[in-house]
Length: 435
Image 1 (tube, rainbow, N blue to C red):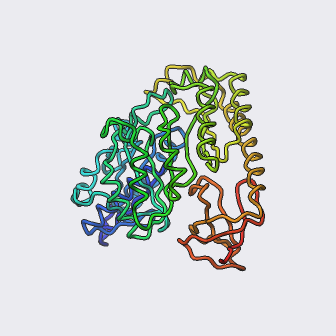
Image 2 (cartoon, helix red, strand yellow):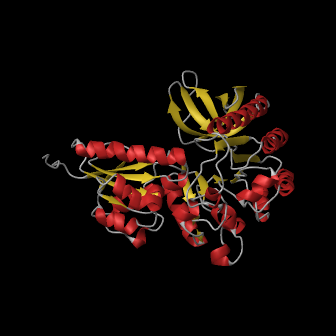
Image 3 (cartoon, rainbow, N blue to C red):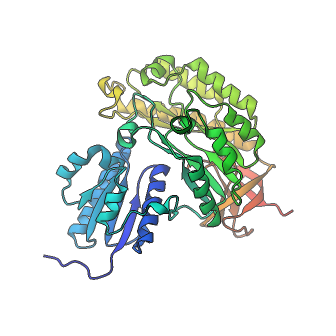
């Protein structure tokens, strides 16, 4: 029988999944640090907390594999304790307890006080908005709401995150001020649905008012919007975007599909015509806007005709940024009662076709940037390049601006003017321009 390590407990938080999980891990780490616990993010530690994702099949598989990896390390004596939290644990706790019993304890998405207690820490209410950020120092995620009230047929998020719950404006402003004091210059607003913000607290869609308060925070220079929903979009947000230089001309609006039969079955509450008009209104209101979207192919009942409709629409709309996923058949969702009748290889072929179209569109749009100068924020140095982004690009998912570090020096975390000298389909190359 092995003996427990004698070293002081060092808690390693491992984060899987989306930016909302990153945020939750940062809150957990902030609480642990406040209780004088030694905490690291995805480094060596003898106590491990795995913040899991349970959204779609690939994410669930990654989460299970990560749990198994650390359980094996525990059995080999390399770590002392393994705790599991997050969406997978919320959704499948009884199954996980049965299948992987060697985890010390499983916690759901709203179990933070109990998780802290298991880690020997106290939940401190007064730490509202305090986090140990894990992103580069110049940007941070700001979660403005939790949960979702939308009835989308394919989505398990309401099962894992509960009903929509907005955070008060003053709380978000306070959190932003604390982030700015630490050197954060870019806020990336996240929620399951930004456009629903405020309905529960203020009885109206209040994203525009929140933005008007956040732009007043000294030190914050960019504010970026992620995960808007197309139905009931509050158009006053576009006025704020157009009039406030701090609001990036950028929106992430997952549209999922465009063929009317699929939109109806997905319970999206919109149509081909309404969605197209919404995007036209976006471009009319903010001509410089970059629109990012995500699509799902291979949804139950998606015919070749439906897919051709989607392909033609992608060509027509010329999205600046686009990602495509294959449908994942998720139990306890409305769509689970439908037959998952599109073969896996057809799903993958369709996703590849969409991304080939998008790659060409992105290449053409990027060629237009050559010779132009953009204000960029420099996130990091990687290999022989400094890596930055324009206001039209979000971290990890969008284009990057690469600056040859052998020829030029730029300061990480700062803004700099960069002239684009060449471009590929998803990367821009440039040189810094001195005033």
